[in-house]
Amino acid sequence: MTEAPTLLAATTLGLLGSTHCIGMCGGITSALSLSLKGRSKAETSWLMLTYHAGRISSYALAGLLLGLVGWFLGDASEALQSSLRIIASAMLIAMGFYITGWWKGLMKMEKLGQHLWKHIQPLASKLLPIRSTPDALALGALWGWLPCGLVYSTLIWSASQNNPTQSALLMAAFGLGTLPSVFLTGMFARQLASVIQASMTRNIAGIMMILFGLYSIPGPHQGWVMSILSVEHGGHY
Picture (cartoon, rainbow, N blue to C red):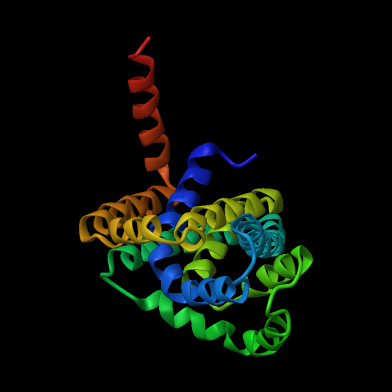
């Protein structure tokens, strides 16, 4: 199973990177809410939650598929596996710069998925308005493939896990991190968005992600950091 710190980092990335998700998926969520006008609050909440379950499932599926590729490459050559980890570490650092707003280069990656999205979008549009739980689940699964640089970079990170199951879990954790900002509506959602968009919050989160990316680069420094943590942990007993 994926180590808890990695899952926590993925969830944190989803939460703190969800400012981008609000801008990209917030309009979709609003449109879905309007299409459910007239239904009870309980039914609306259920269908919206089901939609996001489909979206997160598509992230996990993409993580599984890319994890298989990463596992195959890593198993074929240790050099390839090491290179993949270095690339993943670089992407984590890039995500840190993305969260802080210091560099928006990841947005250019979104253009890579435009060709695939042109074929998926018409299928998703046919499911609106949502009429049933299966429709909501299917719509979420399709919208999960919306081009997003943040998702793409996390996928590259997931591929470096050298285990398809771990890759899928990492992407699911990332998806869960995006859920609060995208799912919640009303005043609380606006308050949450304002906290996430606060400069200090974004800078602290981005710096933490950059440090995590630097730590993830294969090298003797990892053992040194773990030895320090082990000594500090042992000091409490």
